[in-house]
Amino acid sequence: MATKKYTVTLPEELAEEIRQEVGSGGFSAYVTRAIEHQREQDRLGELVAWLEEAHGPVTDDELASAEAERREIERHFAERGAAPGDRRRRAS
Image (cartoon, rainbow, N blue to C red; front, side, top):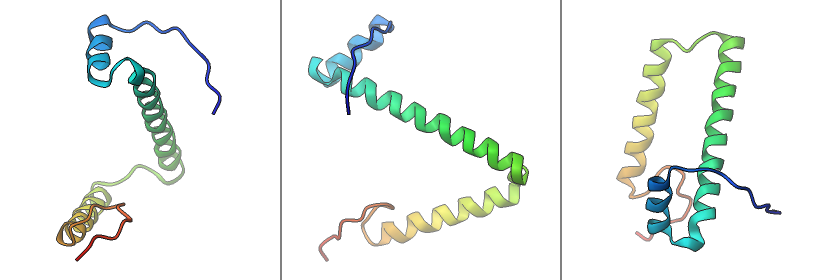
């Protein structure tokens, strides 16, 4: 991916805290990941708004059902020593 240098203004304390954690060479990568994450969140919000417009808001019962399913998936993987989304096979 091509890159381009931009100038942004950040709170000094925050920027220095991040620079200390990642080092000067990792600062741009850290900021890039943060921006990518925010963009993903924004797009997910747009998707939710579109789905709710098309199908109505999610009900409390639907939320409870989805939460129960999420907990069951986590339990399933915890019992096997793997995290959801972890595609690597673990030695038995």
